[in-house]
Image 1 (tube, rainbow, N blue to C red):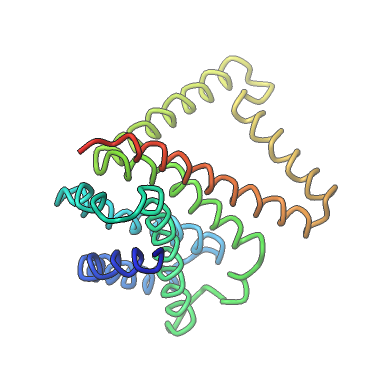
Image 2: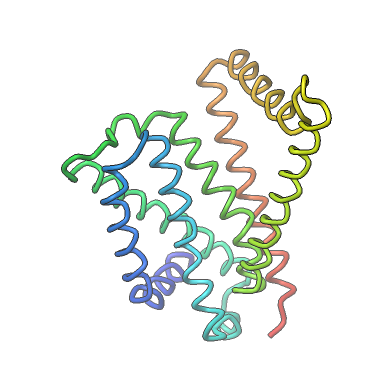
Amino acid sequence: MLHRLLLREWILTRRALLAPFGIFAVFQAYFVCRSVSPRHWLVFAAVYASFLSLIPFLREDKFHAAAWSCTLPVRRQDLVRARFLAAWIMVTAALALGLVLAGVMPGSRVPIAAVFEPSTLLLAATAVTAILALMLPFAIRFGLVGVLIFLVGFQLLGTVVLLIAVNTSARARPSPGVLTGGIEALTDALVALRDFLSPTGFYLAVALALILANWLGFRLAVALFRRREF
């Protein structure tokens, strides 16, 4: 049943994805020639691709098709699972397209071998997980309104964090602010954990944490979608 739901998603949205993916390809063709580092390029491309994966949800909200989807002989949990999987497939396809462009574009500054370093891949996966695991539940439950709620909430959070950083650094100039000290402490803890676990163990722990974050995002989306009334 899952493969049928994925095929349905592709049939319904394939034309709507042509223009956004075309713009993504044009931008990446330019960006691979201007990139500062492979890590910078991959993370930015991953964030871009993650927002592309919202197109099917926004299109469904535009045409009020979620109610029709719920009339299918499948559980709402299966619909959410298919949408999460479809989002990751779209992100992977977009990044694969970007890698092809990085390999064939004259003047490309993105060496393919550097992109596949474990730390670079995990950093990109973290960026994708942070967007999909947090934003998809709101997009599935509330559609475009949910995406706006998420974006506005993140902007407000960023403003609060910035104000805290400015105030704390201004009050105690000789010592680091709360935000700076927290980031430094977190960085030191991660470095200590990597040294304790060895690089392989550290990467495995991060990968498991990302899997857990995606699973929690999926469960939250299922809980929200089950309560949605049409």
